[in-house]
Image (cartoon, rainbow, N blue to C red; front, side, top):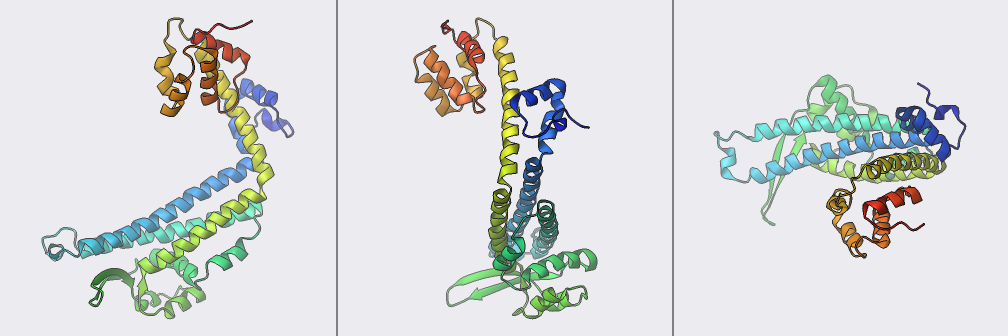
Amino acid sequence: MTGYLDTNPHPWNREQIMAAMTQNFTQVQPSIDKTPGGKIWNDLKGLDDTVWIFYTSISELIDEICIFGERSKAPEFWSLSNEKTAEHYTREVKRKLYYCTSSLMTLVDIARNLDKRHNVKGPETKRAEIFTTTGLHDFLQDLRNFNTHWRIAEANWSINYDMENGTRTSHFQISKEDLLAWSGWKANAKKYIQELDGSVDLYEILTKYRKQAQEYYTWHKGTVIDQNAPALQQYFEYTKTHEGLRQYQKWNMILSHVKSDTNPYQYLAKFLSPSQIETVLSCPHRSEKQVDALIRAVDTYEICDIKLKNKLMKVFSVPVSG
């Protein structure tokens, strides 16, 4: 459905946005979101969500490995009566590894689609600069297909003791033989597996990859914002104007219906933080200065005009000059 704003050339002014709200207020924000800047920003928010899911999946898997390492120190952990045995933690790690590889594939697809839609410059060069562990990215991508199309990777615990330093470490590993039994590995991923010194240590490879991914996606978001700054600036200007008008309507309605015997101070905590309340109360009681302090605290969209201020003055029983 085409909104009123969609029929107007850019840039839109305050009066046009107000007219659109009067005609059909439900179509205003969708029209703003369809601007070039709106599309970019909403795509970035979607990518942020996917990045968060990927990082969280890795954190949960690493946490599971660490929990096993800590709890398995106790002799009773290995008792047959213990419900949460090594097999339980093995299954949990397998499950969370599946989430990691699946969310990685989703993240890669969403990021590349965003780059194509908005013609982002530099990702290929930056990926080559940051993801320096040859074959690791390809391995993790193919591991998702391994888990989906072949079988959940068989893996198990390895507990290593360093008698000299008195340390004990737990590892969750997948054997190279089990992985190479699948014929679907791409060349780089297969080479990565073959060149590993021993089994695949999940804690080690996921910790390394997460660090690289964090560096890359921090760079990526900053680059998208920098390359699309004018479109984003226009989008946020429209959004701020629209939200300011909505706030004006809301406060105008609230202040127009306040009863004359209402004590306004009982509502301060509903709209202000403790430090803002202290700032307002540091001004002379029921004074214009106090009302001005309240406006500065609440009016983040700078929508308060003389009419709205006079209504607020009346609520605080402050004489209105003129």
